[in-house]
Image (tube, rainbow, N blue to C red):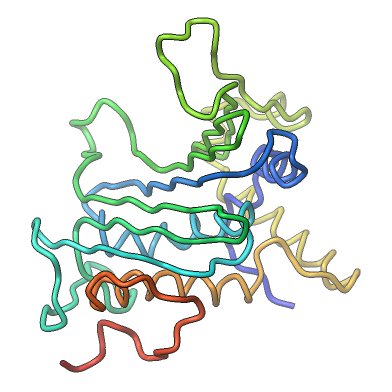
Length: 253
């Protein structure tokens, strides 16, 4: 057995939201929107660094992706095959500082990833970061925010003119009453790793799959590379798994 350290997948409130959505509690799942931190790493770097965590959660809610469509810009210009991949970290080939991507799942569910660099600037923006996920069901909208909290809104989209509608936080006994918000911010990655390790041990003992599997990691890789392949294929929708097994940014022109 092998598990991937996607700590958000382990957060109790997020696990509860996954259970509720998959049980049909809020009606049919329709759409999933994701946004990374969008600091200076926005675009291709965020697609790989934090997009992997978000795509893992996309699959937790929507199951296996079937297709991808991507659009990648560098300084407002579409990237081309001749552009040189760049990165500030040793994470493999990446490019672009603004990315839009759509993913198709079974039953008409669609997932979206949006990232643009320098929208969240430390010391200047009036918020810390944009990292999160929005889930639209027939009856509610769900917002996931760090350090792993979930908020439910009683309509499929936010209606600011409807004053009787308000957000409600998913409260987990033994979790939210044990750690205050500031403490959770400091230790949630450590706590997430503890939960994932415990889950992996139980998966081995009970011969089941862990929360975040190596199979999901393979699909995440398909999603990331599929964004580039779609863009470089004149915006064509690309089926997953990809037929082309080379990285799109490493294919010679």
